[in-house]
Image (tube, rainbow, N blue to C red; front, side, top):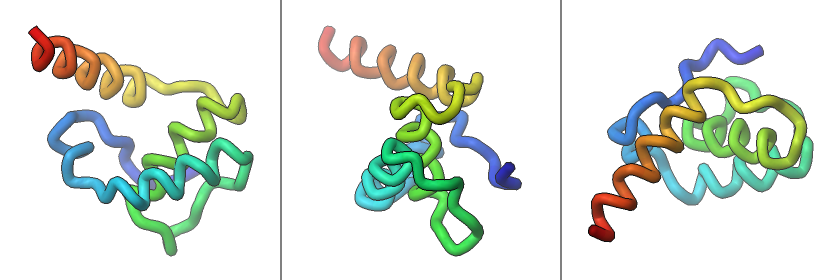
Length: 79
């Protein structure tokens, strides 16, 4: 299990590198093992979400909360 702290706010999410998130997501979705300390927080965040979407791990509360916040922001922006 990782010693990293999951992203919990949209501000934290906004500081991450989108390309690294995408790379991590693909690897997590493909079932690759949890990355070690040689990978960035951005990659790890993407890996966590990809692993959930790929069915390799359960979504945790931090992931659910960031998703709720992101959807709420999108709805506000389209209003």
